[in-house]
Amino acid sequence: MRNILKQYFGFDKFRPKQEEIINSVMAGKNTLGILPTGSGKSLCFQVPGLKYPGLTLVISPLISLMRDQVEALNSQGIPAAYLNSTLKKKEIDSLMVDLEAGHYQFLYVAPERFNSEEFNALIRRLDVPLIAFDEAHCISKWGHDFRPSYQSIIPILKKLLPDAVTIGLTATATLEVQENIQELLGIETENVFTTSVARENLHLSVNRTYQREQFILSYIQKRSDVSGIIYAATRAEVEKISLFLKDNGVDNVIYHGGLGKGERNGNQQQFVSGEKDIAVATNAFGMGIDKPDIRFIIHHNLPGDIESYYQEIGRAGRDGAVSECILLSSPRDVNLHQFFIDRSSSSDQYKDHMRAKLDRMIQYSRTSKCLSSFITKYFDPDEYVEECLTCSNCKNPERVYDMTSEAAVIVELVEVCELPLTREQIIQVLRGEQSENITSHSLEELESFGRMENYLTGEISHVLEELIFRGWLHIEEELLYTVPRSEAVLSGEAVLKTVPFRKHFNEKVDVST
Ligand code: ADP
Image (cartoon, rainbow, N blue to C red; front, top):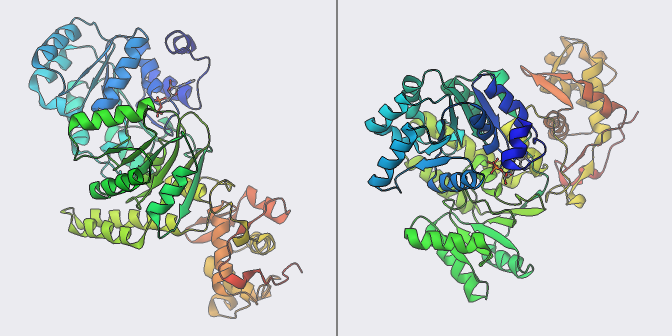
């Protein structure tokens, strides 16, 4: 595998999880890779595709993505082609002949292609040992970019190519989406490979300014010659922001679904080539844009869910250099999303799902927690997180207080008490409340009883939630347990700095005795 990596792609070593994914595919197992944008997902199916005899079929949602990847493979001397609606009938016919003759190692297609009986008949005749689903989250109904055509081809492919190995790749999958993809593509959990979603070079911030356009203008004016994208929710807003920037001397291109194809491609080209530094766009822009040096992404509006936000900011800093991702938003954005959800023709269950996702996005815009950790936890609630120290919440120290001693009191109680306790019991013990919940288990006899009697319920709860959030306590079926990491809180090695529950929380009470 390393030889292929070197020979065809010119790289010396694999990036995290690439090798595991490739080995799993080569062992004939259906495999799922969840790796952040820019981490090298394409190689995960391209290397096995070169190793397997026959043709690798790549299902891809976007024509521009297909074209870029095929061009890249061809430039490395690898025979690859795409088959989509941009080709003329004659080109398709000749491609089909070449495919039949075994001239290609990779074929990129959009899911719609399987509506063609002629194409399906050809696939049946070919030797196709490997199928790759790029952007695999599009398969899942619970994903942020569900494409029914992506899902509907699964049974067709199973019939056409019952023995092919399947690999799915995505940058954005919550646990729910991951499980859904696994079920649909028949992937065992041991063959799912993920790396942390956190990307350290992306510095996140939330700014609740009321003057969004002014903010964007002065942000850009302070930086010359750097490239960035401003995302807005609607075409009208894109036009308005673009005009405002131009009126103030900031040149830019716009991109949204309402432009003609020629203009859209031209604008995209100007941005990617570096001729124009700034793009103002709707979320239609960016998927498949491989511009390595995008230094900032500003969201003028609140996206509808964290997956979309994560995907959009993922376009920044692909070269690994520090890039800023700034979220501006107004309460009106929330109303607009709610309106669209209410008005949609989806089932009630689906609408509830969308509302829950929107709630998490709103929480992100209002949280005082580390923003990077918030996103990591969204995708994997069990992942251990550390503060990034680079997001706007981490960098705002005057709002942050040292709660380590309070945290230690809570952890000690959980550690010492033989009976696993609920959140409520912990708070009541520490506040010294003599309720039935406490006395029936003789919890008032614990040494910690009343140790935080001067704290409000909400304050203790706040520290407790921080401990759970950071993975310093573990919760299972509403009961709390210590974990090996909890030791660091007791020994004073771990420091818990958090935004207070109420302003005067820093008038600290001595809990050390
Ligand atoms: P993704 O699909 O995960 O967003 P790509 O597959 O487009 O990412 O890869 C991003 C970049 O990383 C590409 O320029 C690719 O050539 C490069 N890359 C991939 N794997 C490696 C590797 N093992 N070593 C060095 N560069 C790599």
